[in-house]
Length: 340
Image (tube, rainbow, N blue to C red; front, top):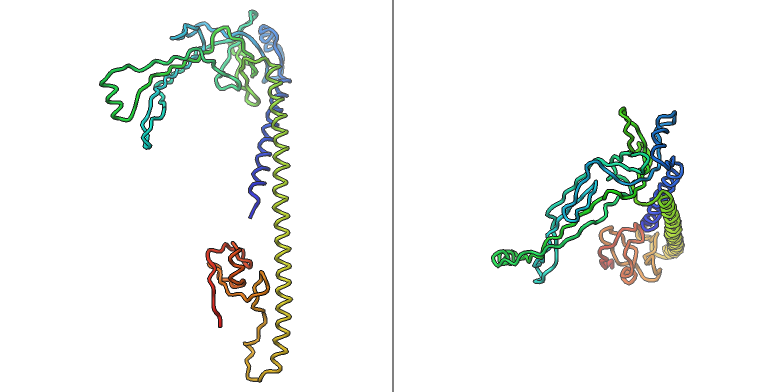
């Protein structure tokens, strides 16, 4: 049987190693990205002769020409998500009430927006699919259900007790400071955009570039140490299984040697005894192999293993076995036999 525990640890270590390499590679890409201190410099850099694609790291404040006004908080944002969950108590089969919820509404809005630092502006495209992009919760309101007698009775007959509706509003407000790492492009009308590169990471985060690099380096080190630990543990499990397998093989070889030695001794005794018997004794009565149990080598074997059908052990030793000593198949049943 293969050492699945050790192999699983080694495979997990390999996966963590790849994650660590990916995090370290992203950190190196962030370090090598062209940092733009003022957004007006990006336009000059794109107009000049430079190697494309150009991966840059910029910072600025969120702004938009057509911001969205939030319903509950009145905040003005560029990305708004609204969800509504119905919370209720449900009567289960055990006769008790458990709390549960169901999604009633999920709505998302986004308008074109850009980063502005006072010197220029850069539009951000596809930010919701970027790494590190989060929408902070702007409002979380719980509205209790009405106490209508008829409605409450109908819900109770269905095994429900309505508690209320929880409404959550997440928004990216205007004026939020963001750091963006991505590919800078300029279209025919002069609009500068930051988008996901064809190769490499794409980050939109409220953290600074230095904080992103430090965080990626920390995760890369953690993955490295975890990978090393799992590798050592996996090698230990594999080595332990291999040593046990070798010892088991040696034990079986030693047992086979003892059985063959006993068979040769028994055959010699039978040959000596046959010279003293009558010539009418047939050759088939000579025993070339002993009838001894291969485990204890003391009692005669009298147990047949099901389903393999081998008979090589006594009933006493067969009680302690789970697999056949000859073919290693699993023993479902040991049947005692009578040969005399």
